[in-house]
Image (cartoon, rainbow, N blue to C red; front, side, top):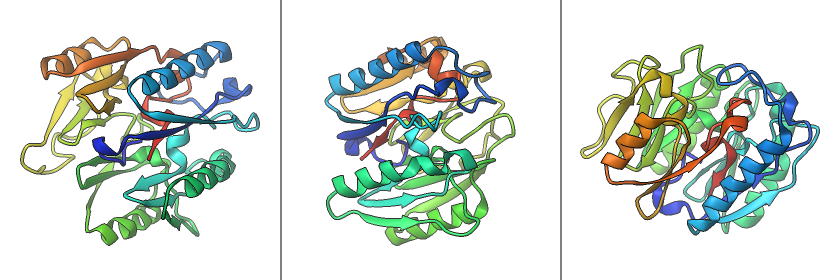
Length: 269
């Protein structure tokens, strides 16, 4: 989940791969998954790696009527004891949300819940956080009314929100960027303007990677100066190693086939 700080990644919610996974939406990184067994193997490895790093992982049962249900990031936005339940941008994904919402509301002490109404649409995958500065992608899945609902929540905390227009060849903001630390944004060339993120707080920076390694720019930072990355993106890996991070690599091939990335598969809380 891209809306929690590094020190807030104690627990993660994930969801199992459904039998119907080969019918998942795919228009960007992949042409559609073909191997449910391999997807499950990769998902189990994902969970195992998080647990190895001390994250308490809870796995919800798959909903076989919803091929994309493992991509939980889009269904709930957790920010400092508050949860925003967005209306997902694709109609086929709306009914995935109730079990995720119910679990989080029961598991987080004192949680405050916000919902979206009317024509507001948002996928959680369109949000990244850099300390107390937030970025939201205006995309095919997230509209201005959805962004307004997010801003209303962030205004409560006095956090800043900046809007980034997502190009038509990308799905979400997290599809083409991530914050492995609370000071660092990784982005591929040729996807966003160089000034897309604006002036950053002191000590923070944007690092640009080759366009062909766009998928590798989605990472998960973990405590202990560790970063989980998808296997097969050598420039991203080298850059992070040069910055002193310990790299945790994982094969995401069958997850990528459904346009899914590392952050798509979990909600940290």
